[in-house]
Image 1: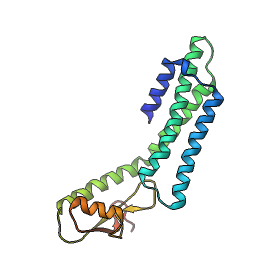
Image 2: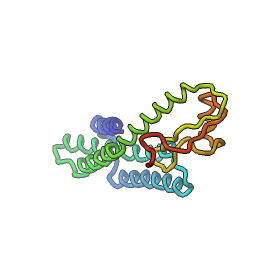
Image 3: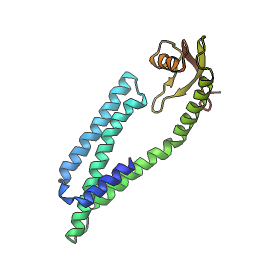
Length: 184
């Protein structure tokens, strides 16, 4: 995300003619962020929030961030070219957005690392049992951004069926969470 923000800022510096009006930019950013919020709200209402669904609103937010950074780069280049002071918006907004993005990653990095290590360990165990003729009981791992965990207790759930097929089992279920997510 930060790489795209930097590229958008550099694009604005290199091509100041791409500058759009501040009102149009803020309206576009507001529209993109509202679209992301509505996407998330719909999924919260139906109770379905896997990571792949969250990627769509994150895409809208990333587009909004890139638009702000591109506009800030264009404004900065125009101000330098005309020997004027850049507007506070061209410096403050990108800094606020970078702070929010950095905070999000910092606040979730431990959880992401725990999920990754649990996936690696569970995959190691299930790969060692590859092709078992009997149903397999394993542990579940929380899905980032939701209260659900995969696989679940229902052997007919989509994720359970796909997992069983991948490892060559007749069925896969889980009734407890993998370490370090288990509850005492």
